[in-house]
Length: 453
Image (cartoon, rainbow, N blue to C red):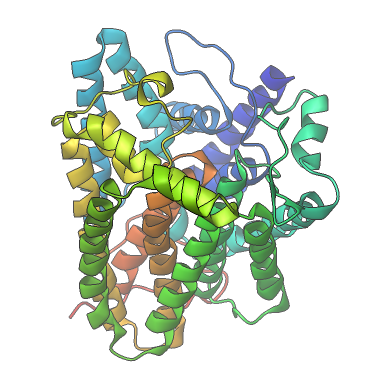
């Protein structure tokens, strides 16, 4: 069943890419697949990366562009260089910790899961029509996923994935029902309840960003319903990571949207976050979590908090010896004596090395600089809303990454959000946007190229 489904997705993606370009493929194929069918089992395709719901679409986009001879281009953005630097670091890690086939595998996987989706997202935002259609499609997706999140929260745990699994469509870990506050933790179509909550926040930011950037009112009932669906996803996840992420996103959005001169706060706040995260890590490295477990017991919050301290302390031993390029995949859970490493930054250092970690810090600061530039030009709500929403989604993810590893669906949607933000910044700051054909503005769009100052 998975072979047939992946074949249909491939054919659909090829057709849409040839007809509408890579941006159209992201809107009409990739987004629905990410929201509904992420957990399709992959099929073996040696020596190439195994096709799954993500890589199949990337294969199709590359194939369609080669067949049609149309490779649309956009002007380079500083974010592009950091994406390229991440790609380079991961290849170097494979070189120092594996063999030729390890490098080939990493090269292929990162092209398909990082480079191509980012490229598609940049093109999707360049066309007002695709912004509008993406807003519509995400609205439908959030209503469906949010509805099932509420069902799984109280009535039938894992009903979505278990139903599709019985039909041979998806395969995901859903035997162990997680409970918090006497409620089932929903997962729906995502990889984990934490993933569901993070996706809810990022999609909410995308909904606001795309609707406003396409010239649609964000007070429309459908937008409000979409945001409610995203809220249901966060609540259904019952995830401390999701709760902290939504708190950060709402705070960032309100400040940037309503406070005049708030762009001056972006860089100081970002630097404070980086310094604060380093200081907090240093404090937690000396925290006696074993004694705390004995003395205070383990309620729902306390248990999660102490587990993440344990992760930091056990991971730091290997992070110190990671070197420039890290350990790669040579460190197992048995060696770490951990079930998982729920801290993206610690995992970056251990697996990819200190250079990769510094690339992420550089990307954070670069996003802050371009966020400052966009907000400085955003004098009207029509421009402030999408910029504030984009930065809220990006920066709140940085907060969430401290308590979860960077992966699942939320990481792929974050890359899409980053790509769209790059193109949006060019539009706002007056950078010419090139396209293989003139952009047909069939609906008023409020984000247009602005004269450069």
